[in-house]
Image (cartoon, rainbow, N blue to C red; front, side):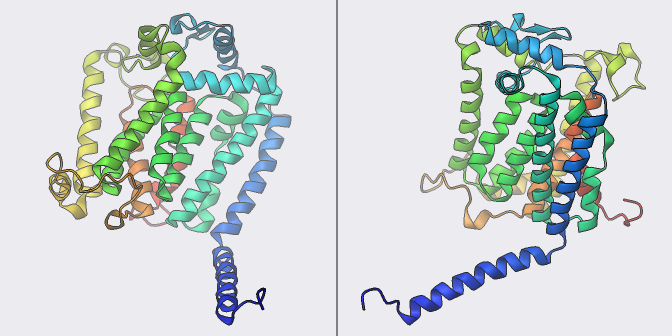
Length: 380
């Protein structure tokens, strides 16, 4: 009969069903998965209680809304987009994100807190995916990701743009774990467009790209990330390009010593000096190179060995492949996350100025980094 299935097709269908059921069964046999869901549910309840009962603290919200209002009012000179905390110093992705927030909330704090509460849970879910996929941290230690009073405050009581930047960053890392390098780079660039601290991940990410793809793939991924920045900044680049670049990408900006929580012990005159900034930059680069040579490229014989193995700048691949991964260059999930978290943490150590909200830049990496050390559990 035409509608009858052959025994072979029935067996194949039954095998696929059994495979899917086995995969789901194996997934939930890992205690980390149901525990992660429980953490998300418990933290969602906690976030709701915080929003309902803990007073909101006004810091940057009014300034954000003023800057967004100027943008929505037609102002395209970045130097004229100001708030009560000063001029706008973030790339244009910040304006689009907070314009959407203003439209959704009417610029009111309480609905914005609810929105940021949802963002907090989304970010936590993405981070838990990273932790479960790498399986470096024991399941019970995942609870450490939910125990920071300051992180809850940064998200739902302060409404900082760091929250959006880090959520996008974590989303890009999750994509890298699935070897979606091109898509991950687009999301990574989106994170940079909200706040430039995400660039602290860039050196190690470049190394990972070089490991994961051929040179054509790397160039195309970087070109996609650059295109995001151009498109995001286009309304400003075609009107006041110098003002936009100078304000949104000011790498030489000096923070006020009083508000910094990093290098607080350094006298102010030293803290604000160019010499101190140069010393920190040199130390930062030196440590990155040391880790790259002795840790991240250890199995390739160091940086030089890695470059020789890839014939850098000498030959091009035989075919112009834009594939996200080569079968011979599969790198482990643990290597991806460890390199990115360590690279970012090195940047944090040598950052001249850190404000309280910058804790969100590295908090979610701390349990992972601790469990990558040889220390006993009680010391971690």
